[in-house]
Length: 222
Length: 136
Image (cartoon, rainbow over the protein chains, first blue to last red):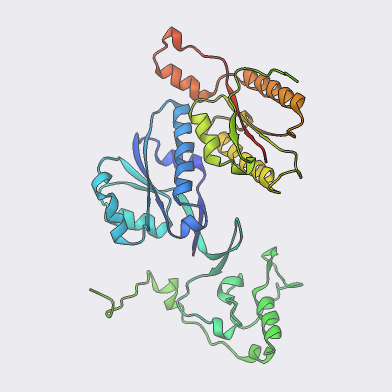
C-alpha cells in the first residue's frame, strides 16, 4: 500500500493561515491502514487545528469528511454539493488523492496534510517499511523475491557494492544490504547458482525516467 | 478513609486506561479543560497486561500535539497508582491542581472568554483539571 505520515501541524497551519472555513478530507484507502489519513486522523487533525486557531484567536470552521478513496472519481463526486461552501480543502490522502481532488475541483485550493513516503508493508503495528519503487519492470523472479531496486540504496542489479559490510548497507548501519538478503534467500532456497545469472542493463523508461506513466486497458473501458 | 480531593476535578471513568484515545484528550482541551491527567494502574499490574503502557505512549504523543498547537504539553500528565492507594490519589489530585493553578487557565479558555467581549461574569473561573481515570 501507499504509506504516508502527517505533516508537522505548524506547516499545515501556515497553509491555511488566511482561511476561515475549510473542508478536511480523509481517505479510507491506504492512508487509513497506515494511520496517516483515515477517519480517525481526520478527527485528531481537526481537533489539533481547532485548538491552534482558538489559541490564535482566529476562528476556523472545519467540516470533516472521509471518502472511500480519493483516487477514484466516483467517490470525489460525493462532496461536489458542498465543496463551494468552503474556501479550501485540506486533504490527508496520498499525493495521488490530493492531485485528483485538485483536478476535480479546479476553483478550490487544495492543500496536502500528509507527506506520501513510499509503497510498502506493515512490518508490525506502527512500523512500515518500503518494498517497491514501482519501476514498471518487475525483476523479483530473478532476485529471490527481494527487490534490489528498492532494497539496495544504489539499486544495483548484479550483486552488492563495496559498501556492504557484515550484512549492512554503508548508507545506514540499521539498513540491511539488499544483495546480502538476496544471497541469504538464494541460500535458503538452495539455488545459489542463480547469482550467476546476469541481469541486463535496465530500460528505465518504464520507471520515472519515461515521465508520468499511464495504463490504458481498452477491454475495461466503457 | 474519607479523604477529600479538590472539587475542580471532574472524573471521567474508563474501563482501562488502554481505552484512552488521543482524540479524547484533545477534545477535553477543546471543551475548556485547563489540564488533564490520566490515572492508570501501576505499570506491570494492568489487568489487560499493557493498557496503561499504551495509555502512556498516547499521552506522550498528545503532549507533543499540545506543544505544537500552543496549549502546552505540560497541561497533560499520566500518573500510575493502584486502586488501594486512596491517599496517593488525593496527593496526585492536589499536585496536578497546584500545577495547573501555577500554569493558569488554558490559553484556549482565555481566548474564548476574550471573544465573549469581556463581560464581567465571564471572568476566569477556577482552573479545572480533569482526570481520565481507568481501572486497567
